[in-house]
Length: 119
Image 1 (spheres, helix red, strand yellow):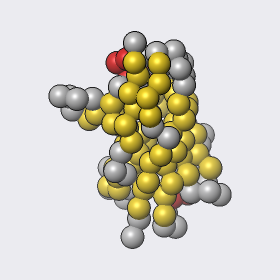
Image 2 (cartoon, rainbow, N blue to C red):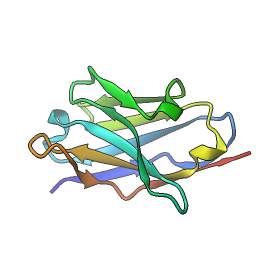
Image 3 (cartoon, rainbow, N blue to C red):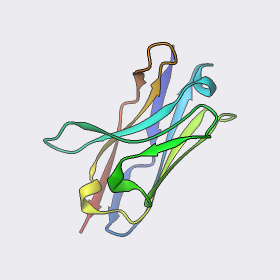
């Protein structure tokens, strides 16, 4: 069974930084695209960033480009989201997810970690 566990969330002032981690159990990590999503209070879940299995391609939500960086370490079965220059509008629960190669959808999700940015 695949499990994803996020960590690294917290409270930070605007302009600060946080690094989220997503530890994945199971042998499929290194073959799958990993993604980060977020959900702010009263809003739907939105895509934040993704990285292919070998790290050669990344994608970002326009509003986080230049501030957030997604990365992965396949030897550690861990994905990361480095968040710099944080803004109050980045406040949300952040989720990592693993994308099925066959069905091309995110089918495994973590429980989420809260990120709160104060102004």
